[in-house]
Structure formats: structure tokens, C-alpha cells
Image (cartoon, rainbow, N blue to C red; front, side, top):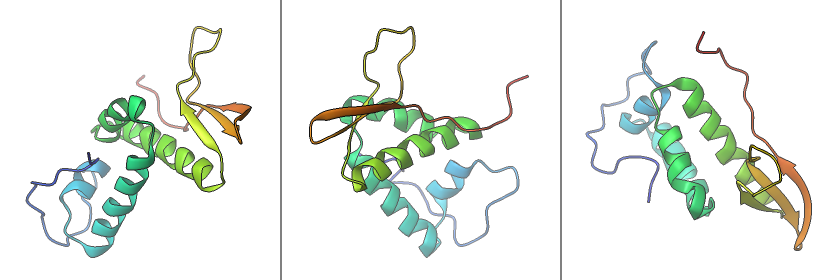
Length: 124
């Protein structure tokens, strides 16, 4: 599965429009650097925990920028943890009303919980 559409008509090498959602531009651009970015992000997504992948993909594809950016940040933190030699369990169950984004472990030993948060404008 991919974060991006395989059957979309690529739009050429124009720059991103001012009000154009980031995902829409990345999904449709035929620029070589954007195509390379799509391949990189898809490789990260393939390594993301499958049980949380569909929800992350939905938010990543959102036209609401903070949803897209939050999903990108989770994907990035997962990949960073993985490349540093840690395991990142998505949405672990804890004795709280909410769930952190990841439980980070190393060599089978639990290390810490990680919550990915971005600074963004509120709905209000």
C-alpha cells in the first residue's frame, strides 16, 4: 500500500499553489524531486506498524494541513526511532484515557512513551 495514488495524472513541474494542500501537490506533481520524496515517504510508510497504518494514511492524505503535518511528523518520528535501532509500537495501551503515539523499546526493553505533537493554529 502507498500513501499516494498510483493512477493519478501527474500535473507537470509547476510550483505548489499558495492555497493548495501539501498532500494534493505531492500526490499530483511530476517534478523529479517530488517523485523522489514520494518514494522516500512510501518506504517509511511500509515500515510503519500495519495496525496503525490505515489511520495514519487517512490523516496524511487530509486536505486539513495540520492533520497532514501531524501524520507526517508521526511517520518521521517512527522512522527516526527505527533508524536509531529502536522499536516503536504504535498506540500502546496505557492506564490513561488517551494513548501515546508510540512505546519506544530497545532490545526488548521498554524505554519511554513518545507523543508526537505539532504547533498549529486551532479550529477557533
